[in-house]
Length: 176
Image (cartoon, rainbow, N blue to C red; front, side, top):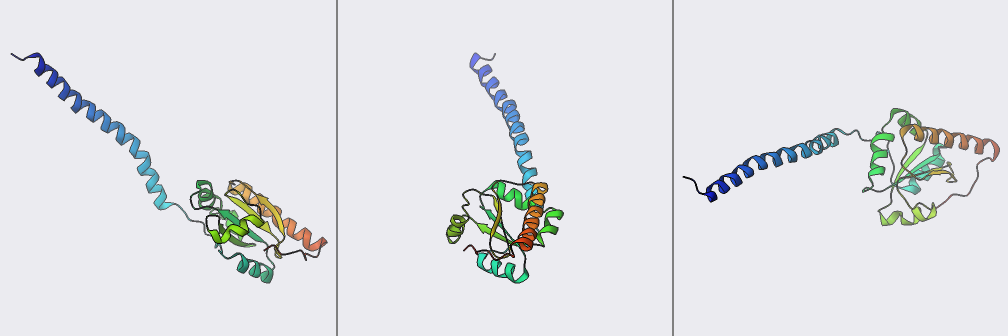
């Protein structure tokens, strides 16, 4: 009838067929969340806040419109920076408060922004630096923020601007 080697060959073939199907099922199960995440990437809401990229121009506008500035120091490769852009800055309450600021996105990977990062002592992304309309540093947050904490920090910066205007006349030195 069948020799021992034939049984071995049939057993090995069965292992490949059924084992391969099992491996494929495990691979499919592992790929599904990645595919779903990819679909979510396509539908991700982008921050509706209009960020300027030129710091000097932003300070000129801030002084002209008498608005404080919000500097968002970020890195394109930083998942926490992207999370803040996609979640915190996309929140309607943050968007509403952002209208009271001149918002600037500072790409820390750009060599042109190296001096700006040094001036504000920014070493990690994401970092948010609030400035008065005259460029005076008010407060700095050096970590990822939820929309709720970002709203609280923005409100505190606005309160600080109001206090400075009332008590100091706001004529501080502009940081460049």
